[in-house]
Every structure is written in structure tokens, then in C-alpha cells.
Length: 301
Ligand SMILES: [Zn+2]
Image 1 (tube, rainbow, N blue to C red):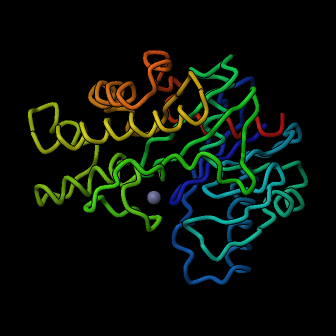
Image 2: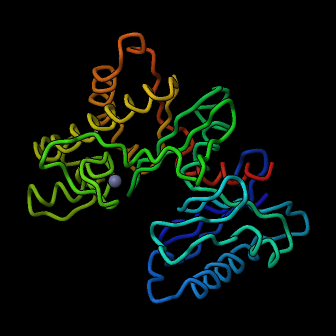
Image 3: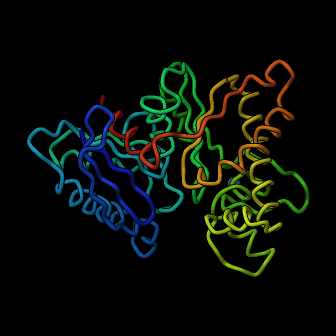
């Protein structure tokens, strides 16, 4: 089985066998910079790039291709209803069009939902009846497994975890979605960099800010403390809605797990109702950054 994980600037493509990556290639793709294309041109460009990338790993034995894509898909149809980074795409039949070009079955689904499937199939969520999975990277995404099945919602937008509102104060931070106070505006890698820049005038990565926090930088420590607290609050709100016991988290910010986890756990229990306090298990992914790729490979199984 082939699997692809599509980011804004990179495509990862791999052959997967029994949950293991046996061969992987990376391609550059600037899918977040297609503003000069109309919708048809953007569709053709994406198909062309994905076809070329897939053909480098395609063999006679290839049974199909699963794709994790940053956008909202209608059920399991492989039709992309919309994509935040490529707004001109509307109801793009990605799976069908690519399947016709490659002559193999193709399935495509939201990247965070693929990560949930990967964690549920191969990672710390294995065997859980229900699982809430959070992707903690440049942005924040979420995917939901209910009764061992991925849950998409009616238009592919279920578990937009990053846009749960965790701060309703007048000065709550503006989120990329246009609302104020979303957890993504505090706890994504991008938000951590932005807040650190606002506090210190220094532009640097979340990874460096984490190191600064370990070295006693109080601004860095405060930002990570707030990020963990808001994540815990958001998880509490989701858990109160869903009564799910297992939460897994993947993504680049896991490198800061040791300073994110304590305030997260404290805020989680503070905001839960008493019968749920102490019952929720939050686990960091053990699949490195392969969660989404492994999940994409399961779409056609
Ligand atoms: Zn938002």
C-alpha cells in the first residue's frame, strides 16, 4: 500500500507494509502558495504533483494509495469539500481523479483524521474503542474514532479541536479562523513563536523557545505554561461532550511534552465534572511523525 501525507510545503510518500514504512520519498510542493491559480488550475496542479510523486514508488504490486490531506472531505467519498489553505478548491473529487490517472484505488481523508486512524491502528490508541487524537504542530487539528471507526461529521469538519474556544476575555487572541480565544491561537507552534516575539522582540522557533524555557527564560516558561493549560481546558470541553477516556497527541510540539503535560493535566481535571476527574488518559504518540502516514495507509484496508 502507498500512503501520502500532504503538508503545505512537503509531500511525504511511502510504501507501507503491516504498519511499517519500507520505502519513503519526500517531494517539495507549495500547496499553500497556489493563490495565483483558479480552481481548475489548482486541481490540475495538485493532481500533476501527486501523480508524479506517486509514480516514483508505484510497482505492479501496489494495491492502492491513501492520502492525508489538509482539508475537509465529505464522508469517505474522497471529495474535498474545502481546504483552508487552498480556498479556491470546492468539491474537488481528488480520489477519483487521481485514481483514473494512476489506475489504482485511491482514498483521501483529512490529515488529522488520518493521524487518529494511525494512532488507533498502530500507536498508543491501539485497541481503544473510542479515541480523541490531537495533532500539535504548526497548527492544531483533531480526529475522532468512535466505536473503532473514524468519525468525519456531516461535512468532514468533526473535531476541529484547534478552534475550541478556551478564552472568552475581551483581549483573547485572534485566531486564523477569524474568531478570538481558540486554543490554536495559544498552543500551536506558530502561536508559541508569535507570543514569544510579542513578549521579547525575538523571532525564533517553538523548539528554541522550549530550550529557553528549560534554561530559565520566564517568558518562554509562561507561554508554554499557558499553552498546556489551554490544551487541558480544551480537552476537558471535548471530553464533557463525548465522554471519551483516551486522548492521544502527536506532532512537532511533543518535543516539549515534559513542560506541556503537567499544566495540561491540571487544567483538564480542573475543568472536568467530578465523575470524570482523574479518569482521562492523555498519551503522547510513540509513532514519531509517522502517525498520519500510517493512518493514510489504512484508508483502503
Ligand atoms: Zn480558530
